[in-house]
Amino acid sequence: MNKQLWQVAGFLAVVLVTSSAIGQSNRGNTITNIPFAFTVANHTLPPGRYTVTHIGGTALGIFNSHHQGTVALTSEVERRPLNNVGKMVFHRYGNTYFLSEIWGAASGNGRKVFQSRAEKEFTERKAEMEIATLELAR
Image (cartoon, rainbow, N blue to C red; front, top):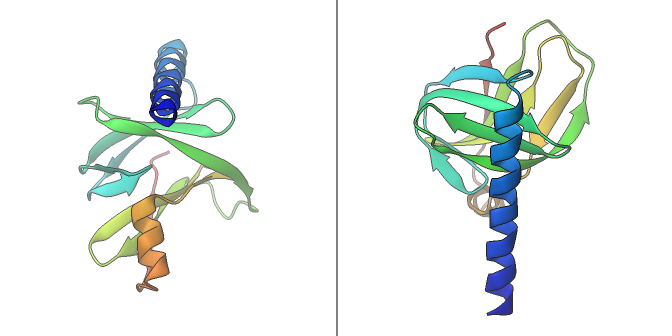
């Protein structure tokens, strides 16, 4: 019972932080069309137009115009920029896509999304994984 109470309190805290952060600023948002269903933070989202917002130090909000989405925990990754195009990187297992990384245009910094339980199951089974990259509009 105590564990459930902490989970509910944690969820409500994330919702409050997310709603206030999204309402404060639209600067730095990335808007992109994702042509396939994908999973992020244990939520499977339908294909569509998504807004990705960096929230605080470690979180990304990913939402579509129908208010479907989630908040994902991430870690910062750095790489030398290869070109001026941002990208989203997905791990694909058969027809199942998992958001893995988001890179800004002309930036050597990106965000790596923590693996969901479902993707961990694929990796534990040593399922064949392919990388799918989606370029972001400038």
